[in-house]
Length: 528
Ligand SMILES: Cc1cc2nc3c(=O)[nH]c(=O)nc-3n(C[C@H](O)[C@H](O)[C@H](O)COP(=O)(O)OP(=O)(O)OC[C@H]3O[C@@H](n4cnc5c(N)ncnc54)[C@H](O)[C@@H]3O)c2cc1C
Image (spheres, rainbow, N blue to C red):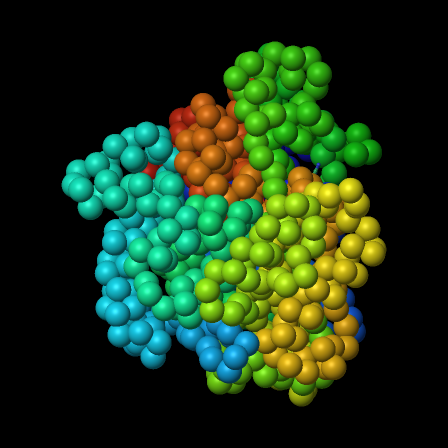
């Protein structure tokens, strides 16, 4: 038996953020329990083939909220180094043409100008309008989600805002891109931003694609595993215990309040203040909570658990190559992400139509990068060789009338490689090894229903105060002292883990624990 203030189930990056804040600011004694030997959840970098390092789960696009980075000194003290993408994203159109999106909007406008003077001007208008909405969203990143109805209300102050509100909620990529731009190359250059979407250009919510364009992207030096490494070192420096091989099988309660957990093998971890589950709510409440507690859950909560939609949008696939491929863009574009699509919408529409029917699309899209290009030679692949990592999409979690077995995985890899080869002729001849995880494998490894990286689809349906379900978006569950964390809760923070800081805030507030800098930390000194 071990005694803690707070016990966190799952060793993903948001868990480490929560633990670090609670230990640092409130001097709480925290344990993070991870069932596997790996800390960081999907933020992995793995040598799947000797000499070649891959990101098999989370792809590699990285954004850590500046406040979290500053508070936890992740860069300054724990060596988490971001490598800015330059350019952000290049699209190869397969006909010798390419288009780059840069971190500086003016540079992007100039690039659009190579295709259309009209679209160069329209892009600045586009950024002005959508940047304003993005700013409103950005402000919500470090706080509990506002009510969607209130947010929408705030968008009715002018005719232009009414239009933005309509476009934000109901505009599809096709609607919005057609509204602003005239050139098919320009329009297609946005389509790679649809990675993670579970609907095509005529059906998806536009805003989610755009979100990626509004903040600067980076890679992590050394690969995504560095995020877990830095956060673990940070959390441990404040006294957090990070325990591997601890598979939580039960959440313990006393008088209706969570008071600890039991792990496989029978060990008990008491939690005096709170238990946080990083696992999807339906799994937490169907597998870890006792039947008696489950029966007493409010009807609205039970209904909410049933209503969360888990749909895969795509998966990360990796190639080892013995030469740099030629996608028809300048070599320095490998300093950022790159996508593949011909001009116009038809290619993406066709891929999503197949996806919707439960098939593996023949022609796929992909958001790829080449860490072996911008990292020190020899660190990700032997010198002269390369690693190409791509988020391949659209990929469904549920195939129609077949399973995600070895044959389906081989077909997925083949279709993706063929699609890349259409834009970089000859690439196929240089593939030494290909691998990645299917949606089924992701589910088995991380408890990720249908391989859904969002732990709930990237749609308004699952956003703001509707995430993970209406009425329970403030991180508290109906069981007292049991909190919901991870990717399942606002604001869908990815491996950057910003939600972890809000969960910590909720616990401190509920238990009237003053943050250390505001109180006499002495009072916590001899708790155990
Ligand atoms: C294909 C794909 C691409 C992605 N690309 C990106 C990207 O480019 N950028 C980005 O920022 N993010 C990316 N992500 C990450 C994604 O955004 C989420 O952060 C991710 O899905 C992780 O969710 P999570 O952090 O809540 O938990 P997870 O990473 O799923 O972690 C849950 C942890 O809990 C552990 N666990 C489960 N059950 C138990 C138990 N009973 N007891 C103890 N431990 C348990 C698991 O082993 C796991 O370590 C990607 C994810 C996927 C799958």
